[in-house]
Length: 574
Image (cartoon, rainbow, N blue to C red; front, side, top):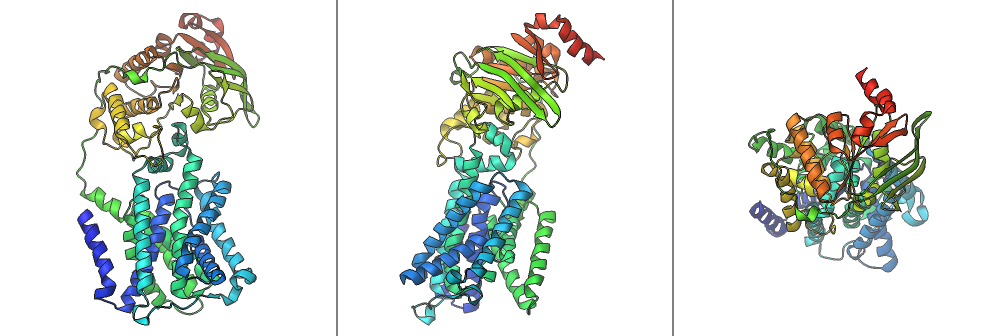
């Protein structure tokens, strides 16, 4: 692949010198422009999964900023083009700060609205943009014999820089965090990924190269028109190029640009007249729909999947526990205090002034009938929901107003009733996804890989480290989710039905692992319906009913409590 990359780059560098056909040079200039935009979009849309339909807005902002600056300062638009990137990045930062509460279709519509609004602004702000009359940029000062070469080489160089940035992000902890967001954003936050900051940084990074490219493209055209620079068709083509080649891959957007731009030139020749824009919008919209339906992963991932050998499926087997690594020892664990916590959903009261304490170093159970508020309490403790009242303290510090990722970094870990992992990432990448470290650090450092391998050895799953975690059995995924939390060295772990849906052998293994970790100091709070499991494992058991704690004590005391028998055990038997 490296040889092909170097050979292809050398051929593109030599092409204007060896073969200066203006038609093909113009075609390649537009391909490079599309590749820059699609590769930039890929940082946000491919890596983090946030689809933007307004990316051509950054092209227009970059072009107009470059033209206005070049005219005001009497400098070459090439020198002003980086300011176009700065303007695009600033716009992305402002937009990101106010829109990243939106997800999915809402985010798509917001970015589309941004494109439409900026196009209207450019059209009507005549004092700055010249409105309908457009803006004329100065003619190039170099020889007409080489008129296209500066544009060709500047966009090729920008493409190379964009690809280097994209590759650096993909191989960093920042990139691993973005892919975790793409797979499951709430889960990513739950293992310590600062999702808001990561999305904002990705959005800015995806806008800057497009802004610079807009400055160069505007100079190449020599004339700026708001309808051209803020074009919906261009935004669709950016997304289409990335999806066609393969979103989330390095070379997919480039391949998509090389496939799509010649097709775009063909449609320009086929559709002329006043309705040409509408017809092109229909064609590219239909092509986008076809790609989503028939090539959902793109060309490159599809080819890789077709060429890959069929991997042997991961099978369940009886696994012996290895020794708990010394670095998992966390001292005395953490103390959790829940005081007067309330939570309502409309007219339904789920938690009604709940009080309970989890002592440091204990294994505490939380039981009760369905609907008693157990999982809701977990969601309030780990930050998935906000309480309507009351306080939650971890080692004496209030955490009920903290972000989810901050709670994870403060020593709190949580598994889920239905496992939440990143199914398309490898087992090892899942395990280390929440590890602390600089965004610029490698996605998996040597130390993290070593610790991840120790944890996989701990649960007997070292042989599966390179498999996608989605190929493991459900019981194996339960163990992976637990050791994923352990990478954060939590002092308090919330386990939501750890024995649910797994076979008796794995239930036994899960119990043994919890005991070993508890001996190393980790505090556990466990929600579980498997009564023999929870009563045989826990030091203290709290019983919930109707959103309140109705009993607490040792398993023996709780087992014989009349209130418990009436509210839970007898009800369950019926």
